Image (cartoon, rainbow, N blue to C red):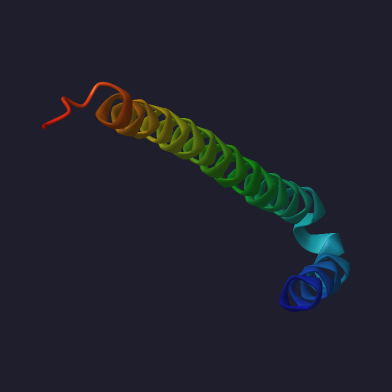
Length: 80
């Protein structure tokens, strides 16, 4: 909702100052929203990569701990 209001405000500003410096305002708006989308996708891919690394590390740790527990049960020396 805030972004929508911000966008509408920017459109009003573009309409208001269209005769003065329309090209400058248009390019400022374009770069601003391109930067917002680039930042969103950058953060999304960083979080995706961190999630993949975390899940892989948890899987490897679980596999290693399972092997240790299995070795503990199957290779334990039996005392009499």
